[in-house]
Length: 200
Image (cartoon, rainbow, N blue to C red; front, top):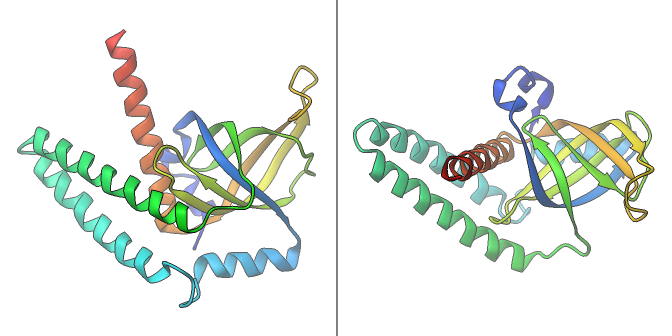
């Protein structure tokens, strides 16, 4: 786990996208915050996939470095490798999701960055409340686990009665592995948006 405050100076945190994601939200008390933060930092050996995640993280770092080197000499091959990597990630996450389907999930329109998220919600949360978030990115099914603090939660009178509160959150704790997945997702979506705009 990494304390996200040290990442907020990273320029990637300011890249924002509008995105549809699934979000599970649980409010935490002070004791629970320490427990969840510890679980993110030190996953139990019995935690499904914790060892595999560390191995995948190491492989992903090496693969990304190799693709960047190849990109200097053959951009088409590098692009093909990135697409293949994305395809494998999607298949892996589909299998993972089928094995561990959340009890309840809500797909929401969100404004997402490497440093936080904002979306409409049915619940009103107090300023500085601490929330446990599981964010499922689409279409890969990648699940990001993070702790976040409430910046603001304001009622919008012109919003849907089912979700009248605009919730703005800043991420405070997230593993480096999940953060890299989140940033990769955001940059990929931005590139897609730019390609679509260029075609118009």
